Image (cartoon, rainbow, N blue to C red; front, side, top):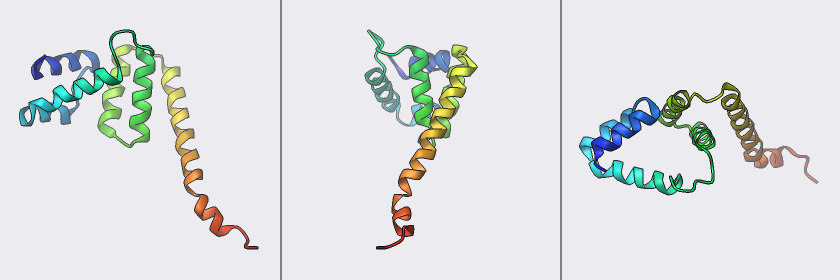
Amino acid sequence: MNSTEILEMMRKGMGQVPAAIEKSVPVDPVLIQEHMRSKAFAMPSEHPALDEDTRTLIYLAAALAGNSPACVKAMANKIAQQGMAKDKVLEMIHIVRLAMATKIIGDSEPIFDALLPKG
């Protein structure tokens, strides 16, 4: 599959192609092919263990937790394309929020140690 076909497939699946990916093609056309190979590895089309909604929610959760605005926008477009139920998306946001709050507490352990009474 060539770069143009890959971009068209992405447009169909997400409504639009993230700007960084669109701009990468004329600069390094092999990069998008490698990106698609990685996607096929992470999300196989034959005998997938997860349904498409679950895959999209996991990707979106990782993008939110990893602070990746371009990926958040791309997956927001994908949930709209899929017509995903609002309650599923909101529950995922709540779970990510809880995970990030828990991370802050866990990362604060050295601070708590410093604040505990000595002896």
